[in-house]
Image (cartoon, rainbow, N blue to C red; front, side, top):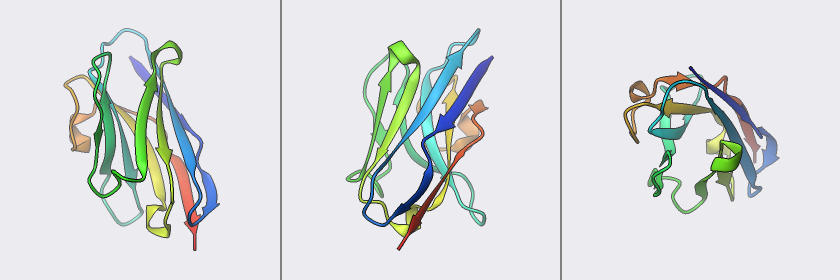
Amino acid sequence: QVQLVESGGGLVQAGDSLTLSCLASVLTVSIAAVGWFLQTPVDVREFVSAIPWNVGGTYVDDSVTVRFTISVDYAKSTVYLQMHNLKPEDTAVYYCGASKRGVAGLASMYDYWGQGTQVTVSS
C-alpha cells in the first residue's frame, strides 16, 4: 500500500513561485517512480514531471521545463515540485502519483494517487 499526500498549493499572483510537496508513505509496495500531474475541470490529468525512485534522473514536460523543477528527499520520502514564474494557465489541481512500472507520461500508468492540491494563479 502506498499513501500519497500533497501539500503546498494556494492562491498566488502571476510571476510568483510555489513549491508543492508529496509525502510518499511506501508501506509494503515497491514503487518505481513518482510523478506530478495537473488536472483542470475540463481536461484529463496531464503529465508535468516525474522522477524515478531511488535511481536518479528527472523528467519534465517540455511546456514547463524552464519553470518547473522536480526533486526528491529520500530521507523524508517527499517529492517536491518547484514552480516559478507561475502563469494563470498553470491554475489546476496538482496530483502526485506513484507508479510500480516506472516513469511515464500517462496517468493510467500510475497506480496510486494523492488527493490533490489546488493551485490558483491570478493575473
